[in-house]
Image 1 (cartoon, rainbow, N blue to C red):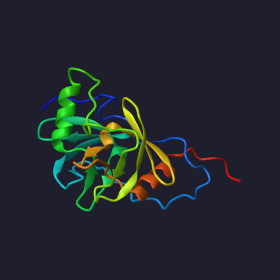
Image 2: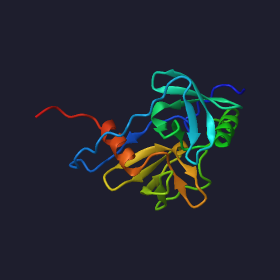
Image 3: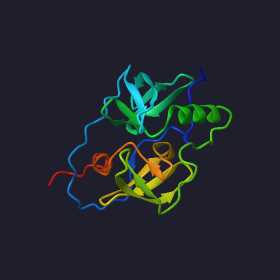
Length: 183
C-alpha cells in the first residue's frame, strides 16, 4: 500500500459554506453520514471504494486495495448501502499516486467549468458551478453557494455529480454557517 495522502488539491478540504442567501429558512437536517471504523465506502454508481480504517477527529482514513488516504469526514454522504464518496476507487488510487510525487494533482472530472450543471448520484439536479478555483469549486444551489473540494466531484460521463442531493447539500451548508447570537 502507498502511504498517506495529504494533498490539499486532492482529497483534503471540508465542505465550506460561502456567501449565502442569509434570510432563507434552515433546511431540515440531512442524516449525518455514519463515518466509523470498518464502514464500507461506495462510489456514487454503487462500486466499492474501500473501508474506513480509522477516524481521527474530522478526518477518516480510507483504505482501498492499493492505497490509504486521509479524507475529511464531511466529504462523505450516507447512502443506502453505506458511505458514499464522489470518487471511484481508481480515482482515489490515482490521486494518491499522483500526490505522492507532487502535491498539486487534482482528481475528479476531466473538466469542471463555470456554468456546468451538477447532479446527484441519481441524476437529479443539485446546482450549477459558479466558480472553479485550483482546489475547490463553488456550487450554487437554489438556496446556497457552497465551496466544495474538487474531490467531491465525479465524472458521470454527462457532467459532474456529487454524492449529495440538493437538499442534503443545502442542509450541510446551513449547518456549516456560523451561528449568530440569540434574539
